[in-house]
Image (cartoon, rainbow, N blue to C red; front, side):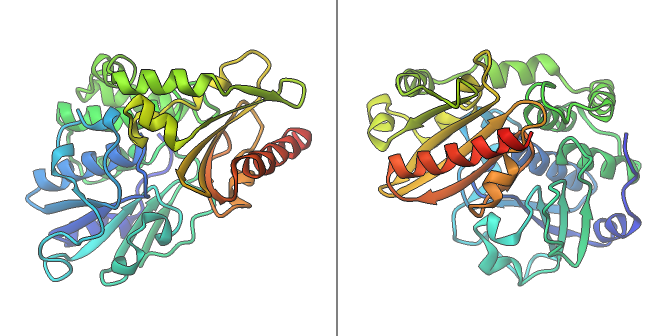
Length: 326
């Protein structure tokens, strides 16, 4: 694996007994898997760990062990902040991305992330942009504490690698990613279980939503950019929630010749969430950063205000410039 866990991170975790864990709003596989994996590691050592996310767990990740214990919403968990020694923020480049920033400054923060644009907002910061997933960093943390994982913990952390590397298809599918995956399997991770959760447990609503989305498919810039969108009416017709749209951005990107793809999801009238995906060296993170978002080179996101036509044009133009730069 890559560099060892810094000593100040190990010291912070060893000294604390009661931790609050959180990650970014609208959590993805790396966020949920890292939180659940680290919570299990801490609890197995006799420590208290409470996970608090602003937004609900997407349906894809609800089968993960312990997901039902995640505290969700803007109301703090019982005993906050007095019953906690500190908060561990995972996979989140800035505190405002948690959606809980008004609360977090009441506790010392341990910031663990792999985003290049991380703002180093913690009292202790561990930022490794070479890490394929924050779940891999949590695995290193466990090794630094000489802690052997059980099957369920290893499986949670294995899922973070699968989701953040796009099934080991993205540019962050490095040798370290494969080495960590192999070690997690030796620790008991079950790749077949992760595969079933991610690829063979789609809700009926998500399939209906996929049909709605594909009807909006449009190609731009001589077929190098693909766009799709989902309106609130489409969610209603499919009887779907936002979590049912997890992973749908991969469909337009899978078209031959497409180098960048965008999925616009209407959050409310005049507000869209843009999920951006790309191939190879095309950097969609730069486009997301221009609109207050973030992510990685091949997977990023942001929110934009405006009508559908204007919002789509803005993002397509940004992606076009990213293609030209590449």
